[in-house]
Image (cartoon, rainbow, N blue to C red):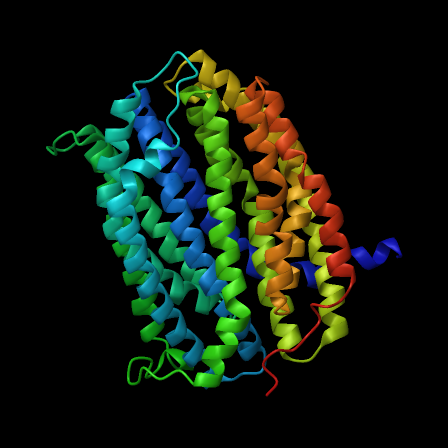
Length: 461
């Protein structure tokens, strides 16, 4: 392959960045505020910090389940948008709403009745810091309030994802950006008891997050229903609850693997964290710091991956297959090269960021090491992430599932479990070995994308 085929012209990059930058800004603000949230909760105490981190790990599974279900339906939205089928997009949005309502009810029931044993999976002796009973109680206090925000988050994602699939990423950015600022402000007020409010600690952090969910949903939904001339699929959305049976079965057929993929992947990540937690609460807290910080830098390849889903999905829906191949190749290259730069920035800052936390030297040292490892792996993550969204854009959801979550369960989890339970290997080399499996995934992703099995129009009925 000629090198110039990997790069586009200025117009190409302007087109990609027009979609990616708002997503980047939205995700960046969210991750930055998450970092500030962590710093605030971390100032209360070690047990509070650990309890919130573990509870958020469980909510992470729910959020990715929502993401997976909406992503499956979103394949159809993106391609319907490419062929300007307003009715098709309206039907898909209704399907999304049915899905998130059912998923929210199920998620609330599971986390309400099984919150305690699930949090306990992450609590193990193995370091000198932390009271495990207090950590459990703080995690439960936080989780119970957060349950209120689950359906609010889910419905707002229905609206936001549908807008993004048309190429409109600015309004979801505004909604999310405003919400995280609200979250930040009320975290400060409620956690520490400012402006006459009582000191609420972890409960205050949860209440602030729920309030931010209300704001996000209100902004996006109100805007959507007041701009129906531009986005016709929001018009008469609730005048009927009908979704054509054929489309429903098609979405379930194509989308279920994506939903189960995200569910299994997020559960897999939680199990990996539980394996790492065998080395003690200090490891849990250090992983919480490193994941929050690295996610701030990862917004680059996450946003560019979303651009692949939108741009390539639209091209496939319009039947422009060769242009879709060319565009996909150039966007993935852009993502990988961008992550060499951002990975370097993360490596440089890895030594300093953990010092912002009010925590022990053990946690700071572990967090620095984790961040350095994440920095080295970032370009490889960018490549596999691009492959994931490429396969998804063409409806290859079964292959996507095999590539993503099955890889975690077949390779990563058995490896981490054996290292955690049957060896005394320290956490840092253990983390390096498990992270290095991404190299295998890169090779698999390359051959999947090269096969061109994803180059399909799935809405040309």
